[in-house]
Image 1: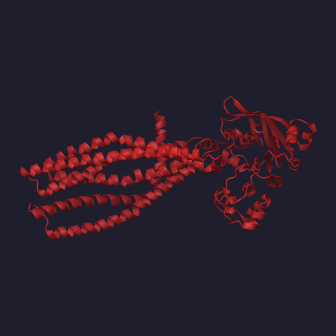
Image 2: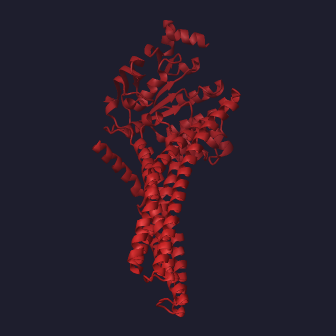
Image 3: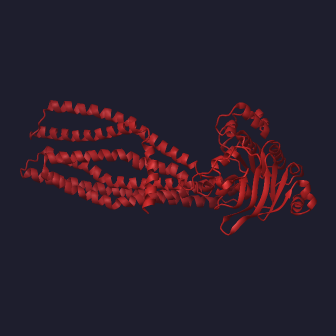
Length: 582
């Protein structure tokens, strides 16, 4: 348990240090303005006491002229302090949260495919939006107010004891009342904040699903059901926020009421002491009431600040804990080339224990050649490809595989994922396209020599699109301004630009019309020098004859393998698949 707590604290410190990294200048200036502001409030209280006692003729030490000059000096200081705070505090807050978010996103990008694809991304969407805003508002901003109130409390207490020890002791005892009330309600605030974060994550997930599945909702005329699901999650998060606000309001109002009671008690005690001739002047009575108000700011803020700090730590721990799961696994680096090929022997894999998807698959893919992987739906084609892409991590889940996968003799379990991704490139059916230019989507926002970009455009079949619309053409959200074939060609161009020796293609043409699918498949087969392994459902004779080998899967096992003519001559399982497809 202690080791776990130390690990949590270590991860938390890694995140919280980002608030202050290269941000100390703004922090110091903003904190100085806050503390000087607290001193200014104490000086104003003293000025009030002197002014009242001067008017009443009961012991003022300064003349009216001196008090006027002092007041003008305080006014000038107030302007300077406000300017310092207006400049430094927003600068500190903006940089602190920006660095926090950037660090979290950088850590997110270190996760491997398995851990990310098995997680609910709404956790990260909520953590980097709502939770980050909560940390900024409820902790970082209140941090300045808290330390200002702490200095104000210490100064007010010192001044009260300087003016009257008996009355100061009464004030100190009465200050315990709002503190006790606040401490009782404070822990509930932290629990409510954590609940808001959890409900907001569920709300973001529902919203994302509704938007991603918009076409399905419309086609099934399920608008009412989709609305009810959204409304349910929306109400849940608002209920959680309402509870959090209610606890905060109760905390504030009860604390204010208790503070008012304490101030009234000090005022009445001071009045009795003045009437009893114990050296308490009208000015002292007023300054005590004012100083009690200053002291109660800290007393009321302390539980709230501690509760918010605890709640924000919980939000940080939740994000840090999620990011710590299955970070990139270490392994040895392999050369960025494939000279012999990929050997799969006795490959067995299942996404869940006791439910294997692949059974003893054995195959060899020679370097520089093209292979098709075919079979009925559910035969394990995509699973095989994903294992070739992510090895022991399983890509889509699972705890690893049985058998072996070797790239030029190097077992994939011992290969670093970074090294593997340098060797292998993947083209999937669902191509993600950024809302940016065609050029940015091909290069993935990196710099490449123009001749390399032109080569990738030419070989992927994108040349007609570039000539018609230009490389600066905006693709729209997830490629809304492009056709399915154009998006797939962008995906192929990306892979070519990376110049990865191995190209894996997973049902890339499944959603395309027959003519476009034929063109895209032909473009892939035209790529010389690459090892291409293509999972395909389209059994087109003209394309199948061009593959150097065809691997036929049936119920997770290899049914047949060979070239097109060989498989047709056997009149086995492939022959049946091909005949039915025609």
